[in-house]
Length: 490
Image (tube, rainbow, N blue to C red; front, side, top):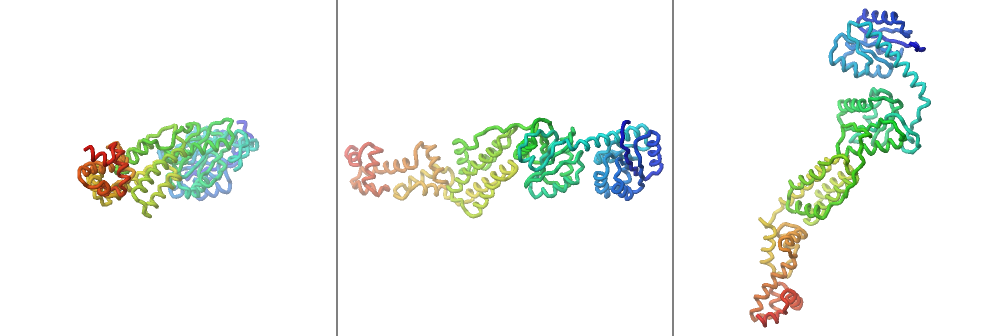
């Protein structure tokens, strides 16, 4: 076979006849195997693995109890390079176990000589190639932390993974999990404060498949959110450039959530956007909040943020847009005196979520819940007014315009609206400001009173003007005549 090295083999099977049969096959085909050890019990198998460190292991899966599987797999991963599985039960479960061991083949009893020969020859070829790879390690680019963070311009040709848990506290367990996971080839592991980089030193094709298997096993054992970004294409990029790209792709989790494997080659550049609300959007938010339109707020947020598709906007810009929305909510709170300690703490919590929460849909839900909490608080406040707020405001003004202290704030408080929002409603309906409406009511009453013999000074005071001269100026502004001229000609 053109192979100069001689290899060690360990056969573990409860059936001694099967063991003798495999030994006979090896002697018949003159395979380059110098040492053949045998084990008939699991304890002997584990001891032999640790002490003799065989190159190839033929193992009967049926002898491994379910409670011993993890310790057995640990020894296999640590002490041998090529595994061939045997079974008398050709079931799906046994096939999955063989795959879990990354076994070269699964022999089904009774054994067929051609299958035995083919698998052993393939194992030896794999070992020979592995030896060549190890021998060539000196020619491979060196990798350290500086390679990630400092540009060196040297292309890195092998796969790189970036792993990030949604919750930073899970990183410690993730590091331990990486130590126990059976990678196709062992990577170099680099940890930062909130993520882990796996740098491989060999080329292999199933980079995404391995990442998906890692994610499945992590989910079964840890159950906490994890995302993996895979860079597999060879090119002219340095490890530093690859790392920057991996980090940018990892930001996609902001839109899609975790429990996914991403590939750098499928990444779209960020889409530009204006992060601030338009004037129309601001008016819409004022209306929805003041009118307690909780369902409209929910619909607006869903349409704005849940229909996003690649290419996504840059996450930082989107967080700015979310703070712009929260600014409208803050103004609503200030207008309506909603500044209790509990509400302020709630507001700060939502603001922190916008800045730091790793997933968009959770921020959106928090804003919706906070908005609904505020509008519900408004609805629960005792109100003296039922029905249309604008009509109620005008009616209140008509009854109280003679009060010189009547102002927008007083009327707004009566109808349960903020002063600025009531002013907005009055302008929309009457195309006039609060001041114009109030003065026109007073001037209309003044016209009626000027038909009497009452002095101008007394009329001014009776309709809410403390200063008769100011009353005269306003009267002429609205009628084109002074009060005395009006009395003379009417």
